[in-house]
Image: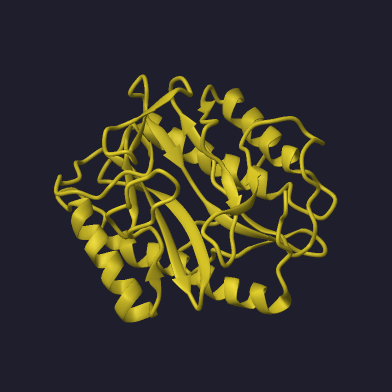
Length: 265
């Protein structure tokens, strides 16, 4: 597994791309409300990236091996959609929860982040799932430092999720990122502490746990992209891009509107 250690120049450019991804999510936030379509959100995002940020929407026409090209500029995954939901003309309803996943390319570098959004008034059980998923991401982030192992991240996420009664999706994971959308290493959100790749300063990767309210099993819809829970239970996901520093970590996907780090008791 060859993991690129980023140079100081790479890191500087990644800071910019990742900040832009976070600022795009800030920009979209006030538009997320009942009656709005995800198609409208996609258009807003596309125009903001191209015309305001001077960035390129990475998902648009992205076609990894064997996939038909992804047709939109962001992913919008609602309720029981785990990930890669394709924006469409259906209006959002009061009570929906939605993940918006954005990746921008700026000066050839990729910045990747996602957040959960509440549409109108949402149920307590949906809110709890989103909160625990956010805590899982942060528990994973807090394990990042030189000398730690990828398994430490997966282990703490899985423990926190299962203790709360949720299951962790295992087919999708975090990933290295830089001048490519997806690089080594793969960052699993389950596993054993002390196992896996040792972390070194200059590594950059995403941590993006997906938790289901029911079982972890999934299926992919006929469009080849949309991934849903097999039992149609709710799913949630959060994502940050993380740099391993000399002493710990730096969250690169930070902006004025980024939700604060949770307080663990």
